[in-house]
Amino acid sequence: MAVITVMLLLVLAAAAAAVVAAPAASAAAGGGDKETHIKLYWHDVVSGASPTVVEVARAAMTNTSKSLFGAVMVIDDPLTEGPDLLNSSSAAAGGGGLLGRAQGTYISAGKDEVSLMMNMNFVFQAGKYNGSTVAIMGRNAVFDAVREMAVVGGTGVFRMARGYAQARTHTFDLNTGDATVEYNLYIRH
Image 1 (cartoon, rainbow, N blue to C red):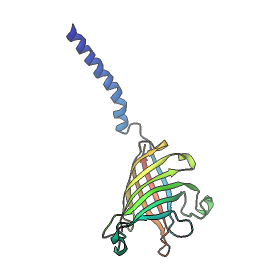
Image 2 (image 1 turned 60 degrees about the horizontal axis):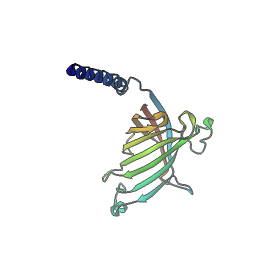
Image 3 (image 1 turned 180 degrees about the horizontal axis):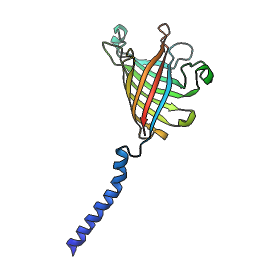
Image 4 (image 1 turned 90 degrees about the horizontal axis):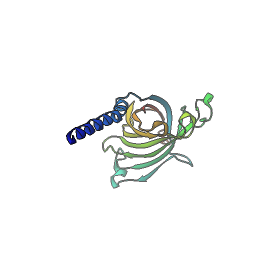
């Protein structure tokens, strides 16, 4: 009788585990995932009275490096719907409105070429994603036409996010160092 009871308990435990594991397996297989595409513009402002990027560290060799190897930058860059930061409140002017901020760091990690290690959160402060974030991490070879980085997580609407971000330089001012980059985010969440 004790053997039958133990076997019955094992069968019940296995059945309960299967019921609990089934939704998790379905979600992991993409069964309940939503796919979202977001196109926005990232504005890295180096010049002027209110820059959105600052250098916080550099290696001794950074000064002589052709790629600025070893420089560490902290960013709080505006994210807009359109490419024009100055008219970001006007969709008709191509700005499209301020969506949020890109907050994080980038490090000049390429010794022989300009290549950045990006680590940033896109913090949405307006629109339908207000209050949510997307975490992006990866290599950014800035002179490549298209750069791809990983979406490694998120919060709010984008909790458990994964996917990728494609970056394309829209404008880069050689005199000021200011840059506007188009980002296309492809997110599963």
